[in-house]
View 1 (cartoon, rainbow, N blue to C red):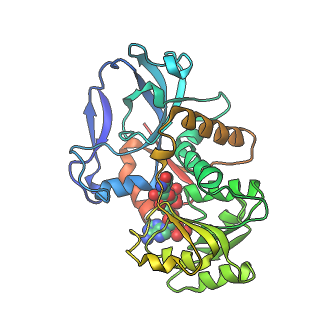
View 2: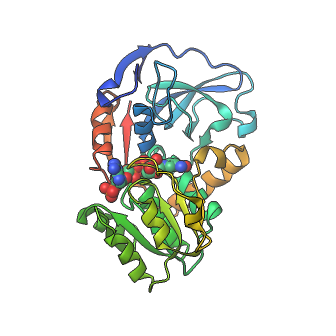
Length: 328
Ligand SMILES: NC(=O)c1ccc[n+]([C@@H]2O[C@H](COP(=O)([O-])OP(=O)(O)OC[C@H]3O[C@@H](n4cnc5c(N)ncnc54)[C@H](OP(=O)(O)O)[C@@H]3O)[C@@H](O)[C@H]2O)c1
């Protein structure tokens, strides 16, 4: 038997229950992993509270992890370059990570280079793949661009700041505290801006860009920031709402985009890595930047699996910077 954290209904962190399960043998095409590190993501909170609608109960949260392959089903790994028992692998975007061991489709696994630590991959892969499509595919950041990154000291935020800076952009990042501003600055954010109740941050972004605005806003905060994000854009700019930490963006008239010919998009990582080739290319690109020291993934805190509720409280309470992991 191995340990698993389940919820039996949507709700607060107290709904996370440590239980036991029998994982069983892998079916054809599957690999069984023994986790060494499990990534904690803000999306786990959306799933816990039921923001995406009802889930089949009981339900296991968590979308990314790192582990060692300890059994392979028939044919598993043939399209993954000959996956073997004992390989160290990572995955992102597969529901059900809060457990000691799990079954995974082998073709969703990425073999880890020896010089990338388990904790770094568990904290960083999903956020790195997300940042890859955001700065390299959905909007291709160009040298000289001024880009706006919300929640710049968060897990995705710190990676976006470093990646955009590496691509030659000037990075403006919003944060909620002066401490977070310093952390963002240390990760390539040229101009940390404190956002609060009002719209001063919009004025500050416009001031920093000489009144012209930015060509792209990476908005993971949603309800509290999105209308301000539109006001920060230059003509033909793109507002990317890729997260809803403060709640869903409220409906607004499409006509609101007309005057500046703005582009609005609401992407999700799953569609950008659904194809195995896209997944491999994005993972290679991100892991090479990590190995080259261009992108640093900060594993701010590690929690034992049994203390996952405390980790959720920290993340939800905006008390974290960088990323957190669970250690089974
Ligand atoms: N669409 C995709 O493909 C995709 C993939 C991965 C992640 N995401 C999204 O990316 C975002 C970042 O994910 P993450 O796991 O790295 O989390 P995170 O950024 O480490 O944590 C969320 C941050 O959002 C900010 N925030 C603003 N308003 C908030 C509120 N009312 N409540 C809580 N936090 C608030 C906080 O930073 P401040 O205190 O500085 O405001 C907080 O630290 C999330 O919104 C997530 O859903 C989207």
